[in-house]
Length: 260
Image (cartoon, rainbow, N blue to C red; front, side, top):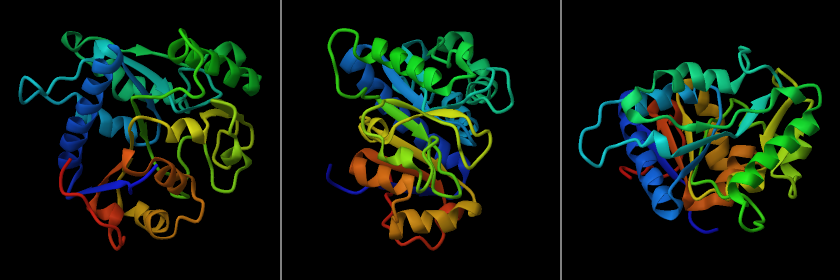
């Protein structure tokens, strides 16, 4: 794919959020220019909170506008639980961001899982994949859905979405959405975008903050070791950007970018 990922490090979450906002708006406007929509995949963890801080801020110029009415939000991974369950990524995004969007910013189209299939994660994955087919391949057959932007987190073990280190799912090449029944992190039953889908996004952004991340960030950027986050870096190259605070990348030997 060419190039290296972009690593941005900020002194605090506030400055990270304002640059992340500018980046997301760039991706949004490019998506709207391409196909009059902004197709985004979002993961859980601490990401929705940072995302809300970035996107709900007051605009500073006529160009600094989040057009939520053009957004189509999918989940990069989801747990096989009801939508109001504490483990649900949908609930997390709803509580942190969706419920706080002012009326005048418009409302995004959101695609949660179909909870009728919680007892059968293969069916749950198949149904979610069909949803992607309807959105991305309605007019023609495509090999992979190409998101305008994937917004991802990084676990302390280097996992992203529900793609875990050393797991057989990392070798999945056919499915767009795959089930997992033995997640090393509870809850065990989940669905996740496959690695080829993640690495084929127009843009991919990771948000990683806090000193608890510095050891794994060192491994991802200096060693790789087949860690899922490192595989995304390798597969996406310069289409991938990391938004971190200084604490998360302390001691990491990798060139930092100063601005977008």
